[in-house]
Length: 354
Image 1 (tube, rainbow, N blue to C red):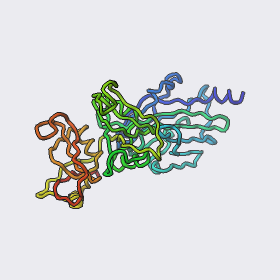
Image 2 (cartoon, helix red, strand yellow; image 1 turned 90 degrees about the horizontal axis):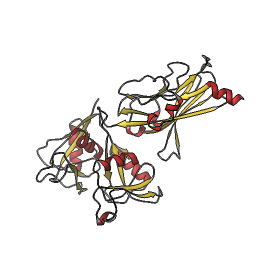
Image 3 (cartoon, rainbow, N blue to C red; image 1 turned 180 degrees about the vertical axis):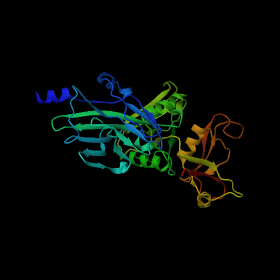
């Protein structure tokens, strides 16, 4: 009876989809039936914005219990939901945030029924499923909401790109793959993100990690060297792989960046160290691979000049295919990982917004 009474008095509801570039307020509660629809338990934000993940306690019969004795815990789930990362714990006047969320999150607390989480300065790494857990001493009520980080103003998605390091293809275990994407201003892509990229024409014959620990690759043009001509177009899957021992490439995801990506005009060609120094002298930093892909895909950046990037690779972005500049398709062209002492290339820089 005690548990039934608690359940009757306390229910947790999530608001429908919210998009915010500024501080948001919690939306009004929706019916419990609506919160069971998975696609409605999503909120959308752009990188660098502030967003509210809604979580409200719906009091019935006008009764109010106050916040004393109620424990609110927010966690973030890993892609395969096998691990939980503490985000914030609140009990009465005692509140603590954790890890990468330290100093960036707080409870909105618009009223006694509000357990919504406000996240400042949203990053790509914040994408994923969050769990709001409310404990009143007798019962444990849990609801979940997924945060999607959009590509740019106008709700454009970001861009998925394949990545392999200087050592060559199939040299990354899952943990190294995560770090490789982070180093290039991106995160490991999800299945949904790779699927959208494939639907948009991404065709890549090397298998790469996704954030759920699976290994897949997208094929739009079936051919013998990539699974055979008799296999249909689609995402080819190797399934789940050992995250420590298995080695593949990785598919990274990045979104719009807060800053300026540009070609630095120089009188002479540069070595890698000279290129990095030239960007620094210009008040910028040498650009990362993810920043080039974001500028190319989301802003239409186009330049037919090979330039150094931060990982030591040389690439150039073409959004308008033409003779001698990726004549068959728009693409970020990969020249390679040349000797860093070679004085043969220019440089792409990135200057973040202050």
